[in-house]
Image 1 (tube, helix red, strand yellow):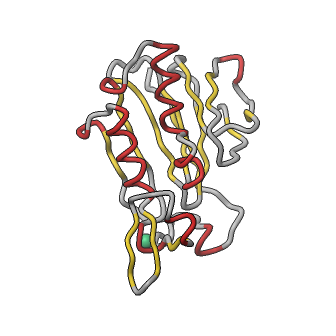
Image 2 (tube, rainbow, N blue to C red; image 1 turned 45 degrees about the vertical axis):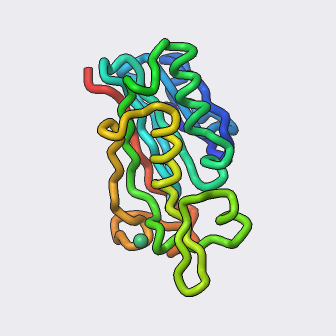
Length: 180
Ligand SMILES: [Zn+2]
């Protein structure tokens, strides 16, 4: 398994069998073309994003909160996949795992100002992280039918850790490898 020492940045690293057991420092995206290599992403409210392609040649994980989305960590990942493996966005399949829903993700005005995907209720601003990711993916050329969004809200779910709810250091871990 390869893990990330996540920093809410946009550094994306290609890993291989030789990286098994490592925690890659300062990194919020991993990609591999080794189908057996297990990649881990840890979140508590942020988006855990799993990426693969239609032929199962590559797979990757992304950790994205508002900072990562603003820094275009998704675009950097997709560009790297295209550049290193020749797989374009229209051939990718994306799964966005459990995350905090818009109604539990109140943000300050400065954060809201970075994004169009906000709603205002009683003068409070809320950010829809998954919608930001979805819109970035569509703009990059990923097909809508190839994007799946898990609607489970980490704040509401008893089965998930939530930073906003618990102020916890605990994280939900998602492991991803391709079946071979
Ligand atoms: Zn919620």
